[in-house]
Image: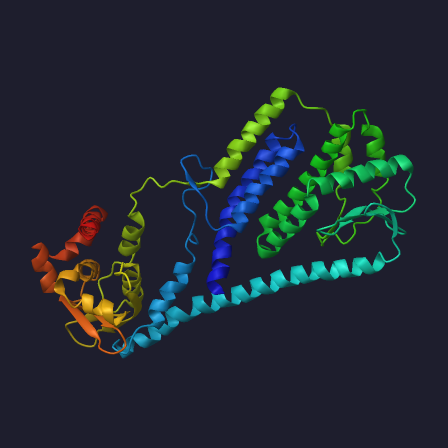
Length: 452
């Protein structure tokens, strides 16, 4: 659950860029139909729901996704420290425990707080609807899924599959017709479903204040665009009587606004202002606004293509873990985890031998008997040789490296020494890690050899 929480946290941070951008573009779309602003929130929803995206040269997202771009790596680093075998020096034990426990604990606590908050919001919403239904038991059916309820101040829609429209009792004919038209427009546009989906996303990302802002602004754009749709569909000029209908609701109280399953009509003052100022936008305004929204939507939907080499990820990961000492278990673990291993061979743990010289490392790997027999043949051991060279170049004082293959019955060990690696390349292989350029040549050469 800790990894899931860190993944959600990383997605939420990344989506915050999209939220801020949509908030900014709404200012420039002030004169455009509100439906355009409303549609842009769909891109934000995508960013909050999906942990992946397409790559494009045209992207408005930042090129660096931050420290949580691969949040699971944080916990994997801790796994290295916990899985150190019995061959490690006893003097390392306090350091290992001190470096492994805190992040695991904090991530675990954060995950439980996150789940608790999410459950609390959903439970509150469901309880709110249950209470509301009890208050509506005296509602009177007046039409197709249309109900009037006494003591009701605000009209609202309740339900998902067959949504019901609830209206305050005692409305005038004109007032009632306009309010009913608005609510039917909501249902026709599936806004009641969108609102519920948006609330579920909000419940997942409840810890992010910007997601709350996005939810509020999305709800505002939903209402304003619905009003504009009503004004557009009615041939005659109904701005004044429509605004009066909204004004009659201004004194009404929201019906359990925390529950999207029964959402009422909010922001009445802003809606009245928007209705009175509504003018059918010029054709060029619509074209420019739609074009701008499409460009922004595509730019926020896509992640940027990295201009760096394709193998930059592994090079950076390995170089950042470069260390002079075998005893630096965190760095050594980072290197071991980043190395590629042959098919059907899985990393299990590692051991450090630091009590006496020569210092060494044992990488314990799990496999099956058939695969292990394959790698008993020296001709098939190139991947392990390459991994040993990489480790010798990055770990200053290691003198031997063992790769222990275990099939559960007859373990087999491949041992490599620094002397072997230096003779293979005709120089001290530590020189490869002295610069990124030289290390890239080593990795590229190894990758080319693997392909051949």
